[in-house]
Image 1 (cartoon, rainbow, N blue to C red):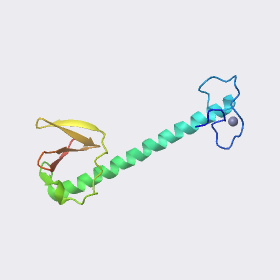
Image 2: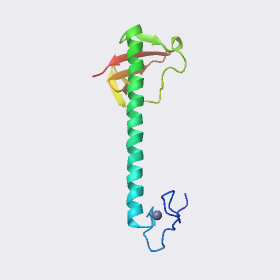
Image 3: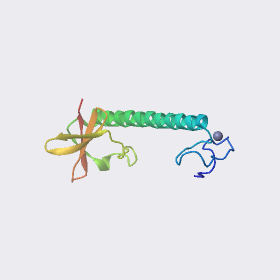
Image 4: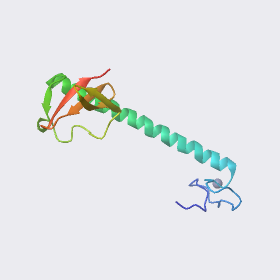
Length: 121
Ligand SMILES: [Zn+2]
């Protein structure tokens, strides 16, 4: 990122040398605007994540409706890209194992390439 120009894309002004080191804008008003835009971006990112969690939770629920809760499901039986294993809202403990929480659904992966899906709230 060019640190010498105002952080607002449409503002061509340079950041005056007098402004403090991590000032993102050419003036306090633009710095405030940049901050607000960043907050908005963060909020949108959070909203997107919430949606991803909801979608993922739904997929696990549908699987549990087909295969059953607390039942070993062979990962090989599922379509390869059905689940997004990187989505997680935390962890939980069940039967001495640590599982991954996705909203109100939790799953535990087992060494025999199966997963068990649990209702955790
Ligand atoms: Zn500016």
